[in-house]
Length: 457
Image 1: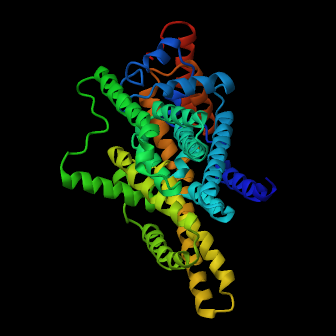
Image 2 (image 1 turned 30 degrees about the vertical axis):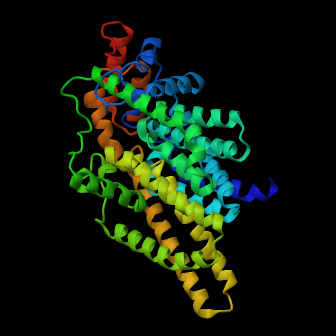
Image 3 (image 1 turned 90 degrees about the horizontal axis):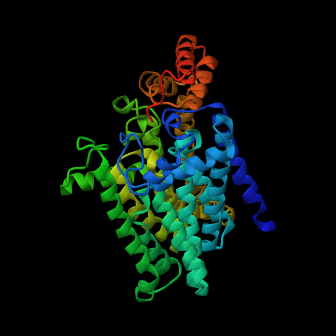
C-alpha cells in the first residue's frame, strides 16, 4: 500500500484543486429540477415509464435517475455546498478506481497515475466537476470500472461472486443511463486482450450481459411510449450511412480533442454541442496530440511492456465501442466513459516518454526527441486545462453561461419548482444582487406556503 501512497495523494489533490472553484457555484439549470425530494410514486414510475415526470426531457429508461437523487437528498439535503463537496469526493473515487484498474492492467504505477490524471484533466470533465446534475455520470463511470475489475477477478480466479458483482455493477450502470449499452463488447475485448482468454471461453460468462442489454433496450422502447407523440428530443440522426459515419467521426474526434470549451457561437446556450477545430486552442491541442503520439509512440513501441501495449489496445477498443452511444446523443458532456479509453491510450505513452528522457540522458538526439514528446503532451494537457477552466469560469454564479441559464430558470422553471428549490434559487439571486427577481421568487414562496398555488411537478 505504501508504494501507492504518493499517486493516491497526488490524484486526490489534483481532483480537489480542479473542483475547488465550483464549491460555491450553487445550482445550475437542471439542478433545480432534479436535486430535490421525490415521492414514492415518482420513484416507482421510473421503473415502468419514462424517467422524468414532466415528460419534456430526453427520452430514455433510467429508473435509478430519480432513486439516486432522492437517496442523496435524504442523506445530505439540498444544500449546494454539500452537494458540490460530494461531487468532489465522487470524482476523487473515480480517479482512484481508474488508477487501480490501469495498475492492474499494466503493473506500472507511473502509467496508472498518468492515466487517471489525464482523465480528470480532459476539458469536458469540467461539466462533471462543476454541474451537480452530472453526478450520475460520475457514478456510472465508477460502476464501469468496478465491473471491469470484478470481471477481471472472475477471469483470474473463476469465482462466481466476482462474476455476479461484475454483472450487478453493469446492471446498476445501465439503470442510470443507456450509455453503457455497448459495454458487453468492452468486457469481451478486455477478456481477450488484457486477460488472454479465447472467445469460446467467454460465451457462458458474457451471454447474461448481452441478454440483459437486449432486455433493457426493450424496456426503453416500452418506457418512451409514454412520451407525447410530438416529443423528439434529441432529434434522431438520419439513418443514412453518410450521416451515421459523420456523427460517429465527430463524436470520436470530440473525445480525442476536448478543447472546445464554451467558444462556439452556434451553440452558445448549450456549448456541450460544439466540436471540431474552430479556435486556436483546438488546433494547438490537436497538433500537440498528433506530435505526442508520433514521437512518444516510437519510444513506447521500443520500451513499453507487453501489458502496457495491451492496455492501449483495450483503451482504443473501449473508445471505439462507447463512441457508438455517444454519437447517438452528439453531446460533448457525455464523454465520461469514452474519455476513459483516451486516458488508457495516453497514460502508458506518457510514462514511457518520461522514462525515455532518463534512459537516453547521455544520447543527445534521443533525449531531445523524448523531451519534445513530453512537451507535446504538456501542451495537449494545457489546452485541455484551459478549456476546463474556461467552462468553469462560465458556470460561476456571475459567469456568462450561469446568468443565461438562471434567466431560463426564472422565466420557465418557477411554475413547477418546489419551495425548497425556490429558496435555493432566491439565495443565489440575492448573492448576485438580482433583487427584483429575488423579490418575485419570495412572493411565489408566500403563495405556496399560503396554499394558494402548488408546484406542477
